[in-house]
Image (cartoon, rainbow, N blue to C red; front, top):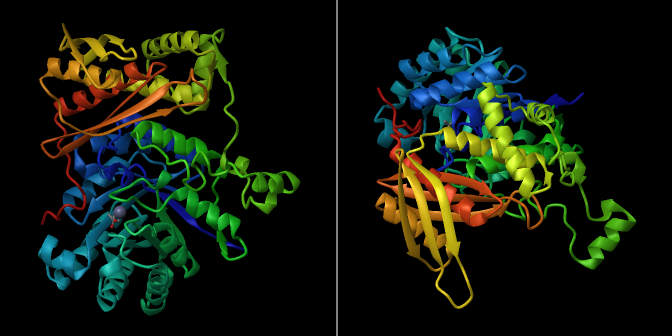
Length: 515
Ligand code: KIV
Ligand code: ZN
């Protein structure tokens, strides 16, 4: 019988560490519910010590999820471990994941601790976490660049102290697949009590090798993989969940383990994460990219029609690619709307919230006759965004764009309740709208990214816009959706500006180790 490969999803923690990918509590709950529906084993819901908001978000996920284990990350310090324990308390099954760096470069320059101090602290942290739960995971951060003898000593000691899972991170994405696989094999052979813990891996994608390294580790005995939807994560990202899961399943002939995932939930999860974070999925992305199952050249099409296996190693429907299915329309009632959202894991806290969203749905159904699940997700995201601090709110936008003429925009904003209007010219209607907004708000941040994608297909599809701004070292993403992409752009810009006016102090888990 095959072993089980545990899938540990860290979209809500490491994924959220991508610049601008921060999520609200409600967004985290929606993603967590989708991960649960996909039967992910463990959901790392966040780093509770980052801020009060992060603590509350982890706690809310712990309350909302019942089938997956909910995990909180903690540095090897008392306040983090105690905070993580408190945040995961409501979970049916909770895990504390504590870590400390073990590579010479991190110990000397970041921690300013000797290896003996690090070892002692690692053991202390695991013991402290074990006071709260039996399910404790330990990570020697930057294991991929740590000295093997020291790594073996640390792992032996933390397993003896009660860590049930030891996770080997390639924190900076430095390792090559054969090397990383060999590292896992060596650790399992050399650590005397290695059979008392599950070996896990956590690979970053700086050299584009996160998935290859993770799979090499699995072939060498790792039985937990840490990964994220769409490969979201710090810098170049983490190993993509969908690629790991489908590689193991498709190449059953090579892997002596499998996951318990419902793979048909992969594409909906990918779309949800992309919609919420505003990180688009490239069309040629494996498994979840729009072209992943598209056959262009005639010769391929001919082969697929005759026998699909000639060019297809997986079935599109097995990963959740079904044609957009119309779920609701203009004549759908409030109950049908509420029921479909419930099926998508979205429940309203108050009647008022339901009524507000239903009104938006009716407006959208007037403009766009067929409403898909993706439209409903975007609609709820929009409603959530409006509830966030609304320092600036779009009252109206008029644009004039004509061949041979300079585009002009007139924008009316409610700024802290009072209305202000401005107009501006620009290179295009979006540029003119942003300039008009700037002249009201007095210049926002520096625009790092502007991207538009369509939520479904067809020219009546809603456009989903992401705007990334940077101000004083802080990076925020703003989102907006509308059937009119200029309005969607203005909403996204205002959403980003609203985030910049809210204080956003958060501690980064890997920035340093408070002693
Ligand atoms: O990349 C890393 O080392 C991490 C640890 C906190 C596990 O994210
Ligand atoms: Zn990481």
